[in-house]
Figure (spheres, rainbow, N blue to C red):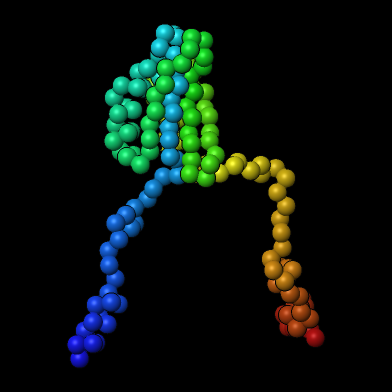
Length: 148
C-alpha cells in the first residue's frame, strides 16, 4: 500500500510559476527624442508620469529612453521576441497621442503585416463545394415532391 501512496503523489500536478501569465511579445521599447525640439513637447510630457506608470504595469518590457542629436525626429522603436522591430514616428504629437502609439506597440505581435488585397480564397480539403455536393435525390420540383 505505501507504493500506491507514492504513485498518487507523483501523479498530482504541481503549480508552475508563471502559469496563466501573459507575457507580451514586446521585449524592449526604445524612445528616441530631442531635448530642445519644440515639435517633441508631447514626447517630453509623456516621459514624466505616464511612462513610469507604463513601466510599472509591464515589468517584462525593458523601457529605454535615449536623447538624440539635434534635428532628429522622435521615434518609438519596439523590439519583439521574434527578432522583428517596429518604428513609429511621434513628431508633433500630443502626450495622449504618444500614449496611443505606445499601446499600439504593446498590443502588436511583431509579425510582418500582410496585404489583404491579393489574398486568394482556397477551397476546403477535398475540393467540395461550399454548399455541399449536388445529388439528384435532393432535387425539388414545383409540385413539392422529389424527382429521381
